[in-house]
Length: 176
Image (tube, rainbow, N blue to C red; front, side, top):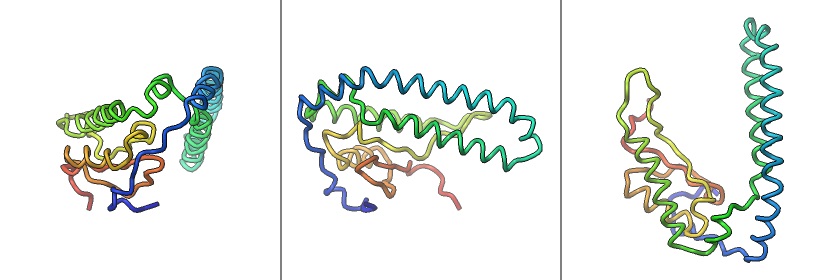
């Protein structure tokens, strides 16, 4: 779904049944710590292997890129094991439109503050692109993210609003 010009079609997700959320929350309380321990173990294993591979990577950039790509892919996959988890605020505020509106405004405001920060010498440049995940705008829809972001100076980027809404800081210098 690469349609980002017609934000009117980006509606809120249906309210999930309370009993299903309660079950998911109970499972999350057990599963999330397991995922955290697994993630830490994978990171530790990559760190140990990385210390020994440092000798080889001194001579091979290709091995280093491959190692970093494999580490990023693996850590990302382990992190996605907890993507179905439900947090306490999600359990309490499912279907509460005002809560999700405030959440979107807070998230976009945070990114706006970061992007509009002045460039400091010897520091990383402020971010010019961001993604607001579905978890933030589930109760109001992607159209509300677009409205708030456009009012604060962001531009929409091609996006799959079933997962996230991607934004570009309009005041950023254009590449090229």
